[in-house]
Image (cartoon, rainbow over all chains, first blue to last red; front, side):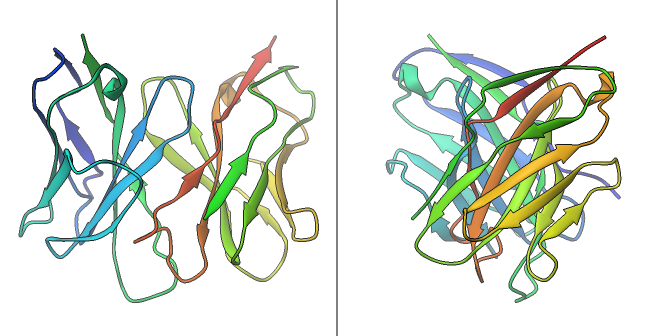
Length: 115
Length: 117
């Protein structure tokens, strides 16, 4: 069973640029969530995708957007990068079964540095 | 909305000594409670969870946590720590019924557990 993978591992961008981060869900999982973890902070929920549609969103501006593909892999896109976007971005996948609780499995993250 | 407070940013403890990492939460609705562990340069791993039933939950590697509804706490304990327990520990909550899904998990800022030989 393959776990959650993310690419790239590290990324350096300059302010104003755009970035795309990628996530491959754990085998059999149909739901993906993205989190931002700033240095010294806990992860913050960005949004969740279920069956290729955004299913929930945290307190992040519209320049944070995402996609989920038919194979349940996912992308996080951030436009007009700001210095405060520097963080570890975590992807988590789960299997939505209509139950009240579905465990999320996290990938190793992509560390984004904005200069 | 939910919030999670981990009062201790760092907890140094000697090897084989007991440890308690504190977690308090605030929520207007009932919640599920979780502890995650993050080793250096790795993602988060679920350590243990409280969904319902017995308020004392245990992990396979000797950690336990007790849900206290009246004190809105979910403190993590281990009677004897090892060097390999050195990591960042995060307490998290999600609203009942969401399963950490559409509303996401709300995390605390984390506690760095430092094991001294």
